[in-house]
Image 1 (cartoon, rainbow, N blue to C red):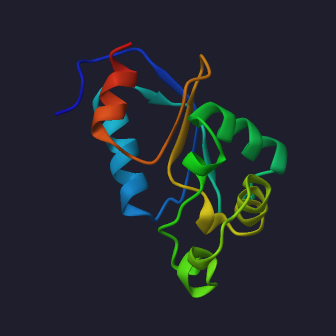
Image 2 (tube, rainbow, N blue to C red; image 1 turned 30 degrees about the vertical axis):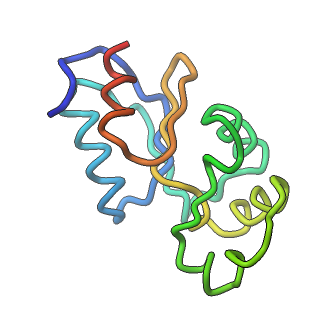
Length: 126
């Protein structure tokens, strides 16, 4: 169940429009009264290294932004390596599938990666 109606604004949502998790996240936010001001399709609008670093800082570190669920993570053998933060940033910069999605940034700078109703409810409640 979505949090009570709120006036929060999502400044930017980094997503894939055809990703069902991203679609659910956007619908959940909007149903709770949040406004999504802008979306960035990470496939067609590559995220700059500077933005990746800013997003990583906002979510609590590079590892929290890096998706180990991407098919390429296993197919490239990355699961058998110890990746440095810079290596994870480089992979996310080269290949959008390594960015945990969606990433939302509120107008007051709060940032979340991935879709969790619990995290979204906490964000929406204040």
